Length: 139
Image (cartoon, rainbow, N blue to C red; front, side, top):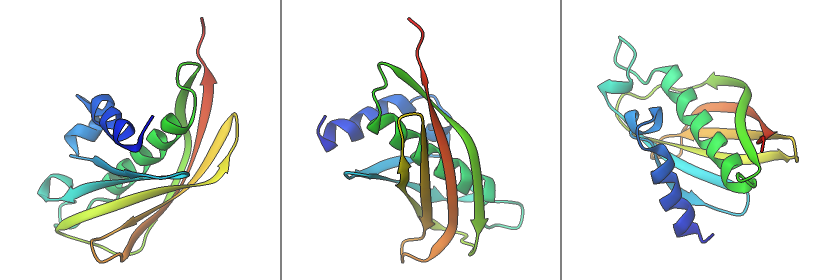
């Protein structure tokens, strides 16, 4: 698939999901990475008006899981997240955050990603580690 076809596919698979609810949009795909963005509005705030850490983690898991989906043969495998951990290092109350999922390990069974969530000025907001697993589809 071309990069454009992959980004179009991402729109299709996100319909009626959490990604659509959070307004996550996949913007760039490379040889070993995927980038998505999410607006920071009151819909993703915690009560004191800053980006909720759970929304950052949902963004990170979405981009990492879709990266596995894009780079694996999904006709043969399901992709599932099996572990995620996040460190939130800066807050943000408005604007857009970007998540870039990069492979640390691209195995046949498990994949490990480092996902950096940044603001529009490339300031680090959160850093996330995600492990996904490829499970064979039963025929």
